[in-house]
Image (cartoon, rainbow, N blue to C red):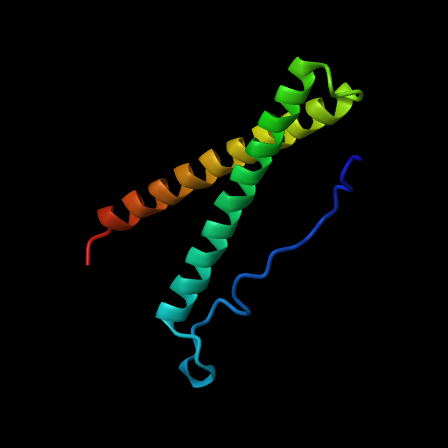
Length: 102
């Protein structure tokens, strides 16, 4: 069965300002961001595993609907492209911060 593609906005932090009165400090934001990244990488890994399983089924002749393989493959490919672009932006931001003079 084809999964429904939906728009799910991600809420990482409630506000951009760090407010210590409600317990969201820099360490908490870093932990939640790390957990978000770990979850995203796990999802990407799961998508790739699904594509690998579908490829095996296709090769064995067990897959009746080739569209599932194509859609899963494109989802995994787009997920990887997004991950690479996010990585590039993070590295670019880090380099920009390192160039700042204090």
